[in-house]
Length: 126
Image (cartoon, rainbow, N blue to C red):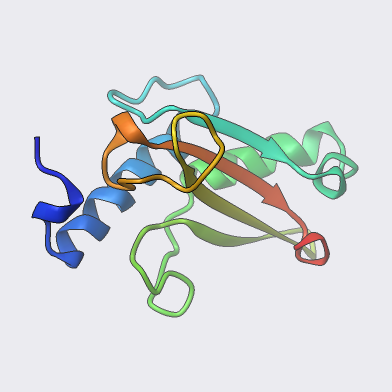
């Protein structure tokens, strides 16, 4: 298996971005995404307070999000995005942890050594 040490930074970023995209697409649970990495999908109290309809719509938008650009995604990992929901700005952030969710992943491009946590949050909660 190729590790991050074997990849140049562009290849590593592309691999991580593809894994993050697969994880995001799998969060609704309605469409299985083959080989989606393991992880958790959480939201802050502020997002939860928007109500179930807003939560579902935000989840759909996160799963379909593809508006990454050099300004919002400088590493090319597809790890953060901004969504406007009827005038409310909501962020999503994907963090990569070790398999115990204790520390950062030792090999972010290796799904066997990484777990994702996708958080929906309001900018004021950052």
